[in-house]
Amino acid sequence: MKTDKQVEKLQKIIYDARQELNKIEDERKANEIKPLLDKCYRYRNNYSCPEKDSDYWWIYMKIIKIDGPNVTSMQFQTDKYGKVIIVGNCSLYGLNSGWEEITNTAFIRAWKLLFGKLTIVNKIIGG
View 1 (cartoon, rainbow, N blue to C red):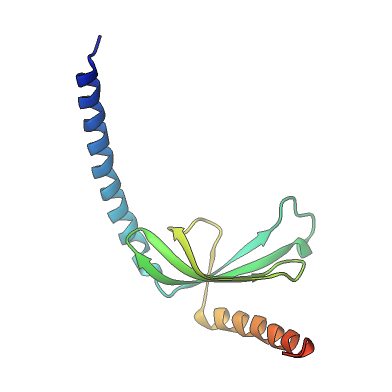
View 2 (cartoon, rainbow, N blue to C red):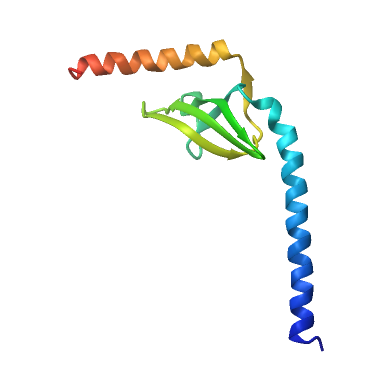
């Protein structure tokens, strides 16, 4: 039977190896995502169990910062009920599948469209 000291020694070896492996993986991930800076994307979003096309809407995202393996983005969307969500500092670990790259022009166009709708609402409520 292994003594407590032997178990602790093995746990430290595993811990140190995991730390080293994490560092290597983070460096690889950082190199993979570095080219994403300033790129724009959109993602087809929905609530659970969509049944028709009108149950979907676009989330728009622009990568604004990369720090090691971490990505910071600006995102906005208007859901199927008209709820507007704007996140100016959204942290991600890399970029998952499903995001479709779009031009900066398309991103700005979508932002201006959203901003225009908000301006109209602001005028209606007397702002």
